[in-house]
Length: 209
Image 1: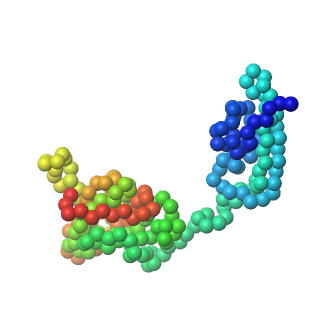
Image 2: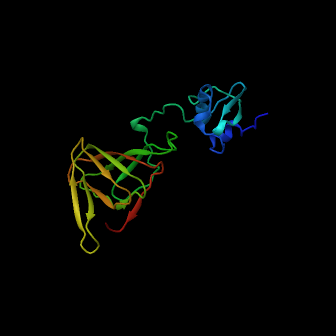
Image 3: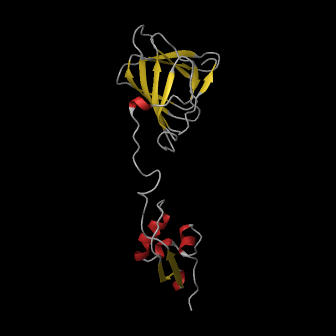
């Protein structure tokens, strides 16, 4: 009687001695179902197949799958979420001289890997200096002409760099880069939309750039 190999679950975890290319073709769809993130909920299915390994050795692969129905489309986190522009939340990390409003977050939409919102700087206003930790930040200028300021150069010789923007422009802020937003207009509010690569709205306020 041929020796019996580990179960299909062991194969998926990379613990089996039989190379995966030896798995019969008709088992591949089942492997893909089990390896995917989707969770199934259906009927039980048992399969047993013999395969030929190195040096002609014969092995038996047993597979028992309790569900082969891919139900990734159901349950929490698998539907579109809609946040109205007038319903943004101010319950997020803040910096002096500006107002942030959360649109897409774990709280408002169940997001897990990004944060998105809107920032307002009043006419003639400046935000405090800050950075966003490990987050990458993308900025889209909606209205006004905000100026984004950061420091460039080695310690002792750092100089402020000013990026003047207009509606429709984009700005990228790398992780941990100190910066601030200024609004030089005496009568127009500066409004931008921001997106960050972490679900948490990381804001580290600083005394200087």
